Picture 1 (cartoon, one colour):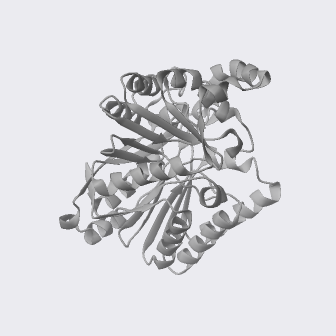
Picture 2 (cartoon, rainbow, N blue to C red):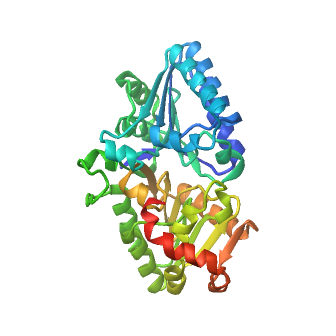
Length: 383
């Protein structure tokens, strides 16, 4: 359990980006930033340029990138773009920054896509930005994302956890955060959940792994207590069976369950993730779950239960979030956290880009698509 003295919702894409840049530009002592990947575009390159400038003026910059995520993002980059990105990262290193690429310890974990997916940005001013966004144009000009700016003891908790996702933390920086935090004003109670499944697996990595994932378990615990409504967002909704079963059971006992995720066209490179999600549609619709697909892409990760409890962060409803990627969520019952989420879901329902999937829509899928679902849906764990 931790707490915050301030929580500012960052649903607006421009507002989040400007707040991130302002934190870097105003930093005077240290700046930490973790991301799944950095894109070769105006956002990725722009942030790297700001980090280099900060390091050169004396700020201790610490950047953590996920190895698998960067390799995945690099598929769509040309060799020249990758070379440019590498050159900027080398500039940051030569300026004296700490740049870490996270790789799980075991070869099979790395081969199967193990990594870290947590997004944290912290400076000595005592503010943290935590949420779903990557350093990519997709996160700021394409998909929906949700992050929050925080102050108070939670900032230290976030930075302290940076080590659990592969980063290096200077103890003196944690003490500096203690000095600027105002515990007396921190009356917004938060739970912080983080799990890195890679650290608890054996030689076979996620294959056959039966370990517990704290984030998955906590989400299930809340879902089974729902009385009226469960609203959630995810990039593509393809959860592990215990999560899926809990949501289906909730819908069957009369809880209004809404799933908001991405449309098939939101990820131009491949539709495999959508196919993995669509493989569940018949089961969900039969239970009464309302499914929305966002044409622009829904990359936020929010769970709102009974309009009284909310969780948000990096955890997608997918197998990878359970057994391959380090993920983190913040949860709260405070209206200052739940109300912004309720407003987001109200906006999504009004958004013309957010399309309701009905049994009639599914019935009209062409035979070729049905065949692909039948063939590939069984491999959803890896899609």
